[in-house]
Length: 260
Length: 44
Image (tube, rainbow over all chains, first blue to last red; front, side, top):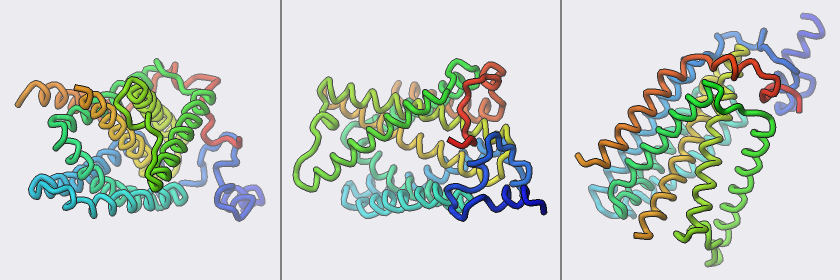
């Protein structure tokens, strides 16, 4: 093995964050994939698998809620799903090679949480869940077509804008969450006034545009012949964005319905 | 089944159908052949 190959294979430092493809200006993954290359079809199929897994566990908590009619019956499962999903998401982000195992587990965990949350919204506003699902998957289809046709062209500035906005929203939610422990909150985030609805619309727009970044990442990775495990990682990143988009649409619709 | 289920159920089918069908194809040339693409694998 030449010195150059050794550096490419093992990286210039021991730090996993700074190894491999991240430091190759135009990585082609020529020698990184030993068990096949990532494809668009493979990523789409794996996204389908994650959606089915998420739907199965969501149906489970949904049924428990409507059989008992008591939110307390699903609270435990909801928290298991939320905390388990967060832990599995962090593992997947830092250990992409494990995505083949952690991404399906993440989908199962998130399904538990989504089923409970959706059932609670549905009990309060009948018909809201199918509306939120329709708008989520409708947005997915429209933005995919807009991306594939070149109508939306993600650039570095586009990415910077989305990442900055997402960071700002996450920070706002975190501050609101912490303030909740002291009996306070950032009022406009949850209000059904014009400002609250405007905020929700903004968050929905950012979540939807994040899908474009996912499409671009998947397209580019497949184009460069990335390792097969990145199919799971690409499907996982799509799932994270779809779940975020779904929850934000659900919140937006609930705010609109609560005004009537 | 009411209009709510028909309209939004249809949207789910169309959206997922578009994703599973068009998601398998590469993006158009105008999308791929750009100089200002995001460099996902470039040192920043």
